[in-house]
Length: 188
Image (cartoon, rainbow, N blue to C red; front, side):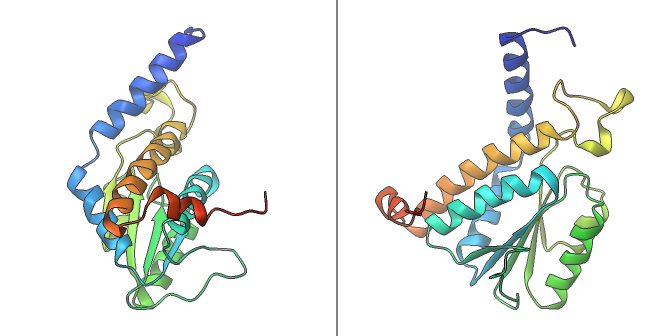
């Protein structure tokens, strides 16, 4: 691409907007309702998707929800009434597929975020939110649709989606901005 400076920003923002405009609003609402009524929430993703999920976990904690990140020493076991929120843009990530099966076998609800409706992960999910964005599974040749490299448009869309979900969850849980701020760490 030969775009420079602000042209690249405009293109990237346009791409993100186009992806998010195609995400099913009712699906977002269902995902939020599922999270709001969960006893416990555990999140997982690989690579940069994991970074987005960790940011969401922080906000879910600020909302007063019981949330953990796979790999943390304090992550509890999952069971019935719990939600495993997982992201697999390409829909075929081996670790994600394995952990989804573990969560299902434990009786937890599996909520998947993916760009690939036909990926193996959708078969293991109880509910899927499709984010129709380029990932590393389709970032080369004629499949490439984004100025951004590899899976960046999917990861950027996750960030924006999560911010909107937090706003929706804030309403569902009745949390105030002041209550959220009071839960923010003082160890920074």
